[in-house]
Length: 424
Image (cartoon, rainbow, N blue to C red; front, side):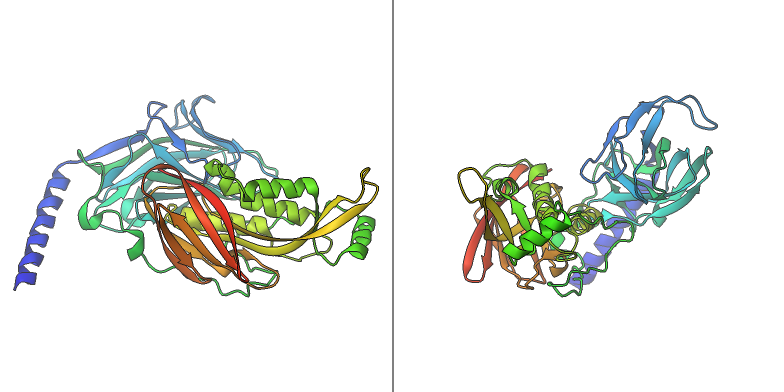
């Protein structure tokens, strides 16, 4: 009986709340003729150029200047995406639609989605004809699930953009048609889902020592790294060492400066894993010795972005290579010393919650031996231990730049590293 009473009270409250909401439903203009400002998240932007927020290329049919302009060109076929954060957001919506005008200089496939505390919603695709303005009216129900949802970002993407084609996308008159008057966030059961109650992460079935990775996203291209050595130089080095990679002393110092750093910006910490692996791959003496680290880095970042940076896959390297040093005072001779690198990286430079889920998926590892270390992440005096194919919650005590002490347990040894992330 008590449970039933609580259920009726909850139902009555929901009905009253719904009625009050409907009475106060109003339009919320996010951007109109340059009067409303915002930003595009730099960490997740794959548009070649940052947006111009008050562009004036003249008036078009059904689109008057100023408007948002997103432009650029890449030398490869791919997708351009980014999340727009407007000054008027976050906002609570109940039904209604997202309205906007879009225009492209080239024919293309436009994708639109909304993001909230629980991550990205569903994507809505629309065909754009070259040089024609399209007015979109997309029901909220087709973008996000729930009778009442919080919106804090508007995602925009151009998909399948051809290589070497300069393309410009114009956006204007972005509006949410049914926003709760005076509400900025969703509270209670309709509010932010804590990371621990979300659906479990699905691990990718892969042999950690495998060089070939099937690829999680078709739009992320694998860009092979060209070796710094000529064929004759490779042959000479192969006679001196059995290592599959040989790097210079200067490259080694750059890797160690990152690995042993006591202080880094969030962006330096985020990019350091890939930058280090790139230097090693440049020293390759053969073909296909390890999986493409750039692809792993990009795919991990995409997964993090899809969860609104609430689920972060770890990037792990556990490998051997050689380092060339001078063998005499005038460097007429060289010595190659073996080095074993164990390195961990994050898939995002920032997070938007004090609690995040960290995932140790063997797919995002570079380990030719197939041996995977145990990883321990420590913040605020608390440590999270992770084994391969496991996940856990990492909690931060405050906002701002935060340091994570990483302890890597590998073959009876413990290696330490410090990672840095911005908590917003």
